Picture (tube, rainbow, N blue to C red):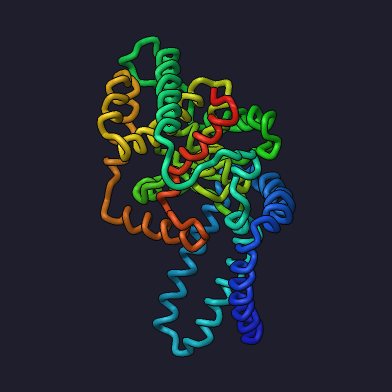
Length: 359
């Protein structure tokens, strides 16, 4: 397609880009002001306008083509005699992908933490203040019990979301509309949230959704229990708005779903946050954890079980491999805790509860 010289230039540019990304990663204030709250807001809005009206995921088709081309390259590489030119073509392709990945979204990995932009001045790192963790857990416990009873009228019944899955995707932006009244930086216009064409393999990989940085589309796993879907949708939209950290996307997704006027969205958010908070309580005090579990009505426990049974059904030997890959990918992009980063939303929730009203 290109001349050998073009391939050589693109290959050189790959290493220049890697150096530039490494350099900018040390300048979070610059990335935040120039890219994350500047250039990226226009890129994100443009991509959602360009592709949001298309009913299927364009990004999934691009991923399929990339997988096809990668397999094709491997086959050609072993059959072709001139391996040097093929390697140049490969690195040239990686160079093009690398550029679009970071320009369209990837620089968000180097932005300031969301605690600076809200701001959350009382954010803590390291070990939790156990009393603050208990306060948060008890708040989430009370709110979850209250919502479960409002939605089912009986404490032994699990909450069943009555909406179609497409409706849940459409309703997600309502939560962000309410959240943006408090924090304008999370305005979500236009919306573009789609079901993944790869929902089946995604389930076997152990993931509920993902964001495509090449097309600006947020995709959700269409097979997960509907009780989890409102929170998953809200999480992926947070990525779409430039929140790269998984814990921060969980946190912003929680706020959007919790600000939502719909009780099913609120319940989905509180259920996830409660699960993370209880996990942290267990690490500090297993006895206290058991006392909280005993306070949970059967309906909430059934919703927890529904989630556990679903993922257990799809467990397979390849899932840890995919999660290990994503773990290392996150570590490469400066998230040193990798996949464990999801649960750190609890730090942010404690800080938010200290400074704002966690309803």
